[in-house]
Image (cartoon, rainbow, N blue to C red; front, side):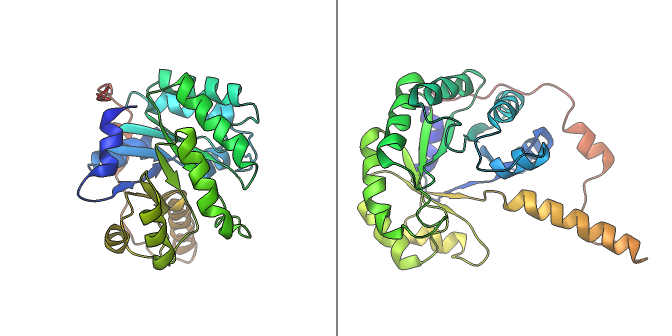
Length: 260
């Protein structure tokens, strides 16, 4: 496993993982001091006019990993369900991600067969041992299977997951209970309606992802801006200058040290 990325899950504070959708967003986040950057599958899919969560963006995800993998940060890729029901194919894809510089992978179970998801996790660990596998269960995200959460996470831990992810879980008491039960770091998806980052830290959460929030906020800001202009008003809010954005694509990225 990539030591540097794994260690970020055991620091004094939870790893706050912002999610980028292109080169500029990743570089801008890195410039703010974030040592690790994730990707958002919604942002990847929306950018090319494909549905999220339908296993249709394998090539686009690999292209993004290629664009971001040599950046001055540690890169974790949201790979949906691995884009295949064949564990060997998922392992091969993970190997490609590692080859272009990714140090982590996020795999979701979509409340499908726990045994199949465990087989994918095991295949990834066999094909790319250095990747930090964040095993996601959608029991809360898709709803209706919350009671299965512990059993699923136990299966994924045994399969070799380095961390587990339960998006949609926001109840502090349930989060704390999961933390006590698990042997690996717990990842929670931040939501403005849920616990704050300090509260999640107090509960024992070790990783907090932003998912598609930044992408959706950026799109929302664009719509607000054009609405203000159309109404004859001067838009407010911060915006990087043309030169600042252009500079994000200039120069060469320093290859990061993965600590392996």
